[in-house]
Length: 349
Image: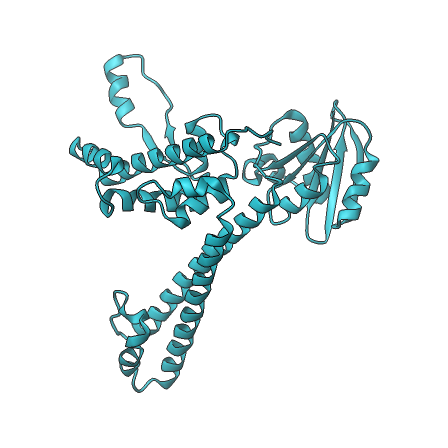
């Protein structure tokens, strides 16, 4: 099978094609357009696989080339360390990427061709970006007052009813008052946009049967259920719960080297092994799952999560570890519910 790699940019794409022995058959730079991409792929005869790195154009590329090649691999650029060593340009990068594909050394990033789920994922991404903008606006607003030595802890500063009282504290600084007004207006606009987005999420989530089932779990609201659905895409992409935890950024990694032959010494060493959460995975999933776990354990009525949490704490487990355990359980239950709802296992491509 021939291996094709594409170094994708907004204005141009550099292709490199290798045969099974690793010999370069073709190298070419074309314009970033659907027509140019299809023409190049059509030039390569026989069985072929194509790869390119995850990025803003990745889903667009998947939609274009999936029908024209035998296999599409969207790869994780963070794992392609070989590409960034030594001399680098588009031609060199595409050649090394093709070599990694030929050797089977790429970590694949899943992409769905379901247009409805693609749109829903874009919607959830936009919702989280608006949330980030709201947080930035709040921080900027408070910084205006802090620069004048005015304490502004809590949430009262954001309320429209309290604007006049807070403006009086800036008496004598007319420019600063105007700046605060700008941030209040920006914050109000973003809050309105967030409300619109939530209405749209509620509307677009209706066709997805699993979301309705997710909402039955304690602590799980519309945002958590929709985020899990939008970013997981299909439950059948994971072989086991460990894979789910890893993708949800809830997996622990260990720094474990230099084992000791003496059993007693080895047991002491095992207790000191550094264990921490992996930095890989989807941080938005981690955030909503931990938030939902917190609601279920601290604010919801009696439920299995709260009982398990109290049991873990009674056994001496710290708060962070207990919440991680509950978040993992919640992720597994959401995954299991979805597999029961979506009984027809699709072909993962």
